[in-house]
Image 1: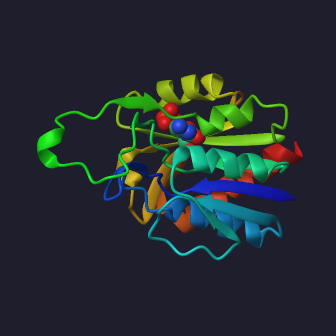
Image 2: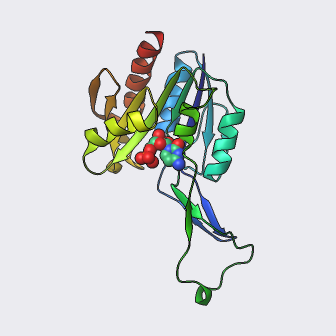
Length: 203
Ligand code: C5P
């Protein structure tokens, strides 16, 4: 069984020394990769900058657009897990020279591609597609909406407090069930998520 996982954050360049980024550590993606590998699956991680060390084959990328193109090159797979914290926007223009602080007040942004949705509605859609939702309010309601909007089979919902932390507390939201996994180390949460996905995948 082939599993593809995006992990870490993306960096969107402004100029040679500045970027837009986020606090994603890659810990949840790495824990999921280990848990799938322990089940005998062939796992590949595509990671943006992250502090974590991956124990499975990993391809490093930087921007959202780069991540999307490497994901597309890595298909087909059986299960796609989108655990990366992808920057929603990127600067419209990249400045090849370092911008002088006196020369800009605002940075114009454009939307990045939604990697998860692109893959979930593509002709090469893996059989099982999993997205994450990091919410700070209306958690379950937003997760249910995300499940439909992104054409996923499962949304793993967590609070933004999980970012960078060693622990997590999640809801597994699918079309047919909603299940809470109580607060535990990310390694244990990942093992439970993988068990759940394997159960659903095998039907
Ligand atoms: O829309 P939102 O960012 O809350 O959705 C989170 C989910 O969508 C995560 O699974 C994340 O990996 C994925 N995502 C993506 N590409 C984006 C934004 C989010 O794959 N540009």
